[in-house]
Length: 366
Image (tube, rainbow, N blue to C red; front, top):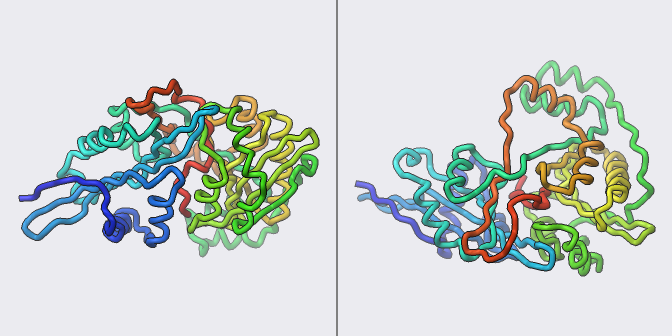
């Protein structure tokens, strides 16, 4: 006879949790990587709940539900928003326990700690389950790719599908890359910093104090938030780009350069929120990427992740790319949304729509 119990995380559970994580995902995670994600965030230690099975052979960990506390702002108001992460159950037990009941219990336990909740991307079954907790499918995910070298995207995708020993890949490698020309936006970049130096400029002491009032619900970008998510990240390598304009406007972008050919724009904000300033910054950023040898720059947001004029700008400058357009034409693709929920315990009048969404909200691993 097997009995199932649940409890909160206790010091010393890290090894068992990482073992469960590896069994389910196939990825190894060090204690350092675990501590960074779950214990060192500015919002506090994560909400970690464990499901255990016990029989005559002993007790073992079979499931994990995690909530990462992310600092947000809404104008002058500070928020703590919980992000569901690493929710997992061993395959052999998925038909033996009714997992939604466990998450409902966890939700009741921790809801008073948070102002809102969200999930990024996950299985449709998990998204359906969270609807019962009050999560709304708000904001459709959109992926944009700014291609700088024609053919590189096709080669990258085919290599993923066919392997780099494919005859097609070998043939493509003989074709010289054709670079795209991007006109400078006006030399708005004033500094490019690696992670060791990115926390030093005075810029980050005051930038978010002013910029936060331009947005409704948004992830907080004080120095300690960026330092934790990017500059102390144990998985990836980033460059932080600072922008300055003659009118006095300022901004920054953080680019994941872990893959030297394919860059990811993880976070960006230009203040004030004027289309012409964002246009100048994004064009200068593209020129910098080309100078660094990048074949593309990718950006992920949601259909409500920026004000309309800024989102339209991304749609104008970036595109889905020939590979993604072809793939979507061949594969029936379901739209993916970002589920969000206002905490039943919160007295704040905030909405689940029009959140500022960038890659700062992703898990941060490679």
